[in-house]
Amino acid sequence: MAISRLFIANRGEIALRVLRAAQGLNLETVIGVSDADRDSMAARLADRRLMLGPGPAAKSYLDARLVVQAAKASGCDALHPGYGFLSERAELAQLCDDHGIVFVGPQAATIAAVGDKLRARELAAAAGVPLVPGSGEIASAGDARRMADQIGYPVLLKAAAGGGGRGMVIVNGPDEIEAGFHKASAEALAAFNDGTLFMERFVPEARHVEVQLMGDGAGKVIHFGERDCSVQRRYQKVIEEAPCVAMPADLRTQLHASAVGLAASVNYRNAGTAEFLYDVLRGEFYFIEVNARIQVEHPVTEMVTGADLVQQQLRIAGGEGLSLTQDQVTLTGHAIECRINAEDPARDFAPSPGTITRWQPPEGEGIRLDTHISEGASIPPFYDSMIGKLIVHAATRDAAILRLTGALDAFEVEGVPTTIPLHRAILREERFRANAIHTRWLEQDMFAAERPAAE
Amino acid sequence: MKAPEPIADLELLIEDFKRSGLRELHGRYGALEIYLSQDANAPGLDGLRQQVSAAPAAVAASAAPAPGGHASAPAAPAAAAERAWPAGATVVRAPYLGTFYRAPKPGAAPYVELGASVAADSELCLVEVMKLFTAVRAGAAGTIAEVLATDGELVQGGQPLFVIMPG
Image 1 (cartoon, rainbow over the protein chains, first blue to last red):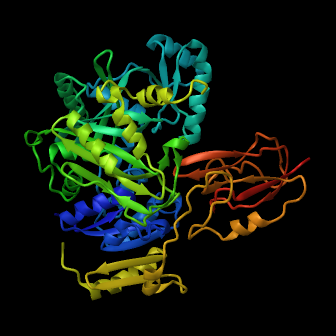
Image 2 (cartoon, one colour; image 1 turned 60 degrees about the vertical axis):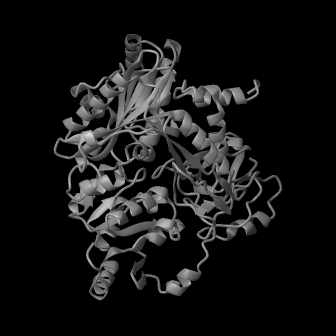
Image 3 (cartoon, each protein chain N blue to C red; image 1 turned 90 degrees about the vertical axis):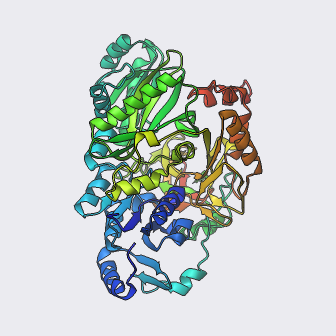
């Protein structure tokens, strides 16, 4: 391979995941960590550890110049950004290019293009990918009203620069459109420093389906099937599965072709995910966005395909191109992942930093745990609350649910509250077991049913 | 992976380190372990091994100050919590452990300055923990008489942040 020393520009479980993939390919590893992570598992296992700065991410993990400087100072010839933090900032990819460091991801120009949702929609439209009926830029409340009349209520106002649900407002009818426009615009401005909005038809019963892609940067793109991430809370994924068995096979084939076509049209390089909304009632899928990075939920794809996606990323970055052909990617069985967060489900998911005093994870056939936690590990207050991902693989969805139930029951964590009880409750739900859910099911139906009517 | 050449690498490493502006570097090449720091008072390798990473205290269930503290947090909260407040004062406290921000976003003007008049529902600051931001309100009308935490500082649950005096 044309790379020999990798800088890991991330923390937590993904830093460890990247580290192990790199070690598997005999790459040297250097990690940049904040003061809060100086004793983290990835910091201890890396060949070298650099202190980037204090705990707050703005002064450590989010400082692109500092990160690239650290990579350069430690003689790294490649940099893996993980997910979150700087992973989708075109600036980081560009700085790497400028300093002769291989960025393990797409080109800076691709990141910039797909990071702008309006640009991404245009690219998708040009590639013949179905889009949910929607608008271009919405400049005023009057614009919003005219567009909504055309598209038909309910509509969704979204931030062009957005993500994570911020700057996103559902408008149910004409009487809400003006207030909705101002709310979304103000939220978008506050969150992204850019108040630009667009509008889409709101799909009441949608599943979130996404296709894992890998491109060589020269027009060749393969897919690794799709994932279903329809169990969500506040637009954050809670449980992810592969494949999406709720979708008919012919539609899944069309979905894959759309995603591959879109990525190939921009000569996509390295790993990416095309996200779609599957309208259950209409039986149609629509493009949402492209995420230009490895995703949190990539392990479910790895479990059903047997591929090591992070090693694939490193091989592409090392100039080896795609090491698989589409025919070599086959799907076996069903995988489910649940995100374990240090949050208290009994106290409206209050984030719960602290120290893990007991950590007894489940083990067994078809069980995988991606985590940076061990007994005594501290969970700093500065970063997101995810402390691990529990993934199971079995022959069928039903068998996977059974296996996951057993694994969650055996998982013992003390020191901080976690979302393990939430996952156990979800797996007991009839609607989840029957796979008859949609992206708002968890909050709208399951949580609502748990609360007294007075609330 | 190329075989490490520790000694030659070492000199380059020290040069790179000096130029990089990094504060600390800790690395291992097989049997060789190295620790570089720009800080003359740095603990050194032995100190590093002995350093117990003081973990942040869990979020307190109520507004009471959380026990313990974080390694990088100032030692102030416990002492400040003991202090006597002037008669009629409203003490605005952190809802939970987190980072204290005086402005709604980086570079923006602070929500309030010392001496500012506030209403009971005025937002005074943000406290952020694990990407969850909570706006903290005054709770009483009056004037900001004291600002007890610094922007960007880690505060404990229940730690006093502002003192509001009536009028």
